[in-house]
Image 1 (tube, helix red, strand yellow):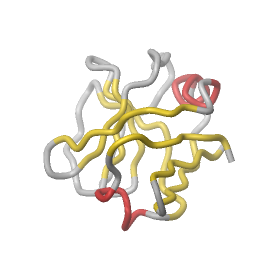
Image 2 (cartoon, one colour; image 1 turned 120 degrees about the vertical axis):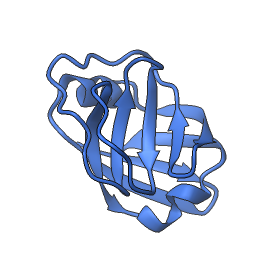
Image 3 (spheres, helix red, strand yellow; image 1 turned 90 degrees about the vertical axis):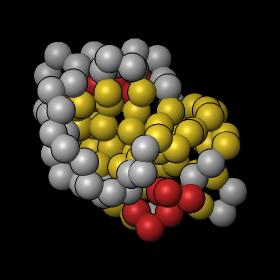
Image 4 (cartoon, helix red, strand yellow; image 1 turned 30 degrees about the horizontal axis):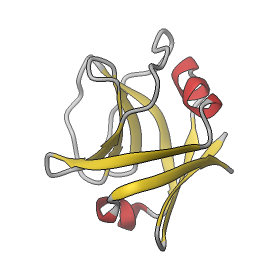
Length: 112
């Protein structure tokens, strides 16, 4: 499963893992949704709630697509981050990592 995140001339592609959370996100496609910067290493958006029952914890840094369960937001990381017991990996970047921090406003998230 792959998804595309598009905003103006920017396109970012992620390959999702096989967790229920990733499948829940994929089932919500297409989404037209607002993204916001958060902290100095991530962009976030808020889909419908995802099932984290079998999702792995997110580790790594730039290029990880994750879900922060307490707030219900999907996180597009463009910098390093610490491991958090409530942050679950949904997938990893395929292309466009250099553009994540430039996302703003309304984006379109689609299956590809």
